[in-house]
Image (tube, rainbow, N blue to C red):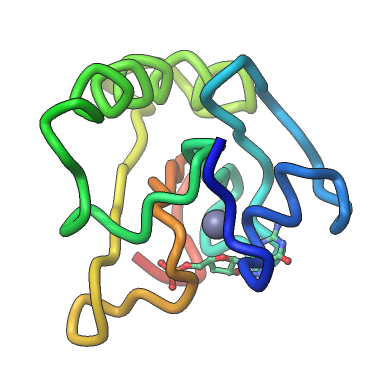
Length: 119
Ligand code: 5GP
Ligand code: ZN
């Protein structure tokens, strides 16, 4: 599994930095964002160090599909209300102008009653 020794999310996957985990399997890890914008705000990441959506290769597409398929389940599990009254938002910041601060691919999954702090 390729990891980056200086990457904060690789360290979270390895348990070197604590996190509030909500899901884990062989390839995927999910945990609460440390600075939530919304009542429910989790980060869904591949365990493997993929830098951003701009770095996704054809062989990663099944993994990305599985992550997106998990997002609605985790949103509900963590307290988002069901569609259509509830729902959730998936955001993936990519690159500097895309607002990406942590360079390990992650999907923000946000939900819960409004108003939200951001978004
Ligand atoms: P980006 O701006 O790259 O899309 O989002 C990075 C997110 O990672 C931010 O929402 C930030 O709050 C979150 N984050 C940064 N460092 C940590 C950390 O050590 N633990 C957790 N749980 N979240 C973090
Ligand atoms: Zn990483």
